[in-house]
Figure 1 (cartoon, chains in turn cyan, purple):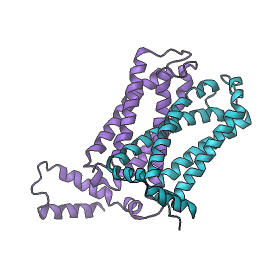
Figure 2: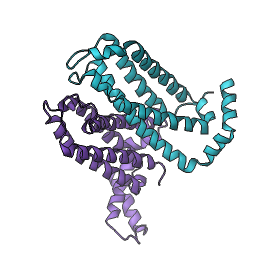
Figure 3: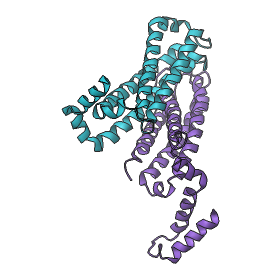
Figure 4: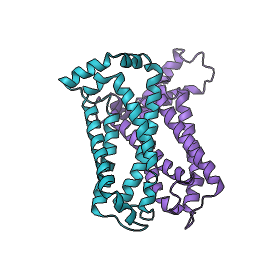
Length: 165
Length: 185
């Protein structure tokens, strides 16, 4: 399969070999940053998602959205360290069902957020303190919460899930 | 189970295993940790090999981390000035989420400790992690008071900023120490 061939090729590039040689300190550092990023990302996103679902109505929706830069920081941290993990050990990841599960739910979370910002973003301003949210907002909030916890689930399960064939 | 632990301890003492112990009260501690680790429920979790055993406990511990530290991050950011257009008490609904996450992690953390009690109890980094969590909880008490006692107010009292920074540093430190437990034996 072409993905497998690409992973083999990537794993033999000098960048990948260099990262592998630095694993002793780079891995613990990156994993730690990945966990800190996870807390930032799920903390701020989850807060906004709950407000989208109609919880914590005393927080105006626009205020809940002001915490999203924290989520972007967490996402940046996790994307960077995540790419680092992948470049160092691509073969191990593409051969793991858990990794594909993680990528699939990352796509769901990303497309869901893009859909919300592009088509619903302007409506956020109309929702004030104490006001309930429209159904579309509730669906987006629920999808986001489920998708991010699924990303966490498959990420933590990486060492335990079955290999592909 | 207790009887067999006592028997094992008696044998250990008789065979001179603790002959050179410098702090002999630790014999009791070691016996307790061994007893804990050998409880059938923890042996099963450790050795089942099922995806619903050890891996699931790890997932729960990570999800709990997201709830506890995620909530703390939002609350601390509010104390540091983010989202100041909402009154302080509007954020009190985050505490039940934080405590739910904490309960999940206290239970899952105890299980993770119990299945390898003798190994984890001698890891300095484990005790550092527990101390950092204790410190984080201590600063959360006045943070709860500021948020819940904030009423209709938006302004944060001066000590709020300091508490928020200590909270962020200690929770982050607990994550660092927790992750390093896998590396520093």
